[in-house]
Figure 1 (cartoon, one colour):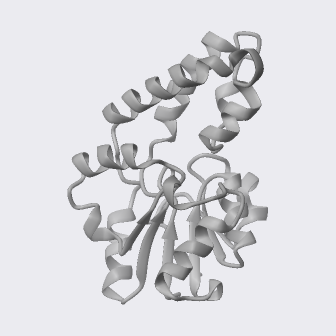
Figure 2 (figure 1 turned 60 degrees about the horizontal axis):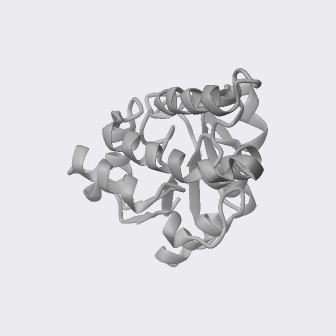
Length: 205
């Protein structure tokens, strides 16, 4: 492994429960006929959620929801997944390049930087939605990250939690570590090489 490429939510930060609260509020307001929808859309990008559930008559509500989401993300608690800080410190001490590869936008990343001034120092590159033409599960984002370092896919390992992210890493031809923070270990196992609950667990890649 020459580069470790990390998704953000559910991989670096344990934020998925907070997003479930946010989307639960929106889904109850706009889709009361579909209880539990917030659990079905876990791990999907904002574009995918809008295309599937807020198109047609609800397309005019997208701007409102985006505004609410931006405000919500400014106030979120960004708590590291157990063992992450120690793990990435070990990687960097070993000379492994590290990158965040996230569908989140720059506005959200500014909120992260305010909460965690040390965040920049953990990564050699931070790629956000503004850097990609195509969203996960397309491999575009991870291939761009590998290209940023001049490495082949075989030299990179992806850390992901969502189905779309796991598929993206696989499609990029990279080894994939699945975090069972958003979905169950059994559910994500077919899409990755290794499954862990957090970084305190011993694992080989």
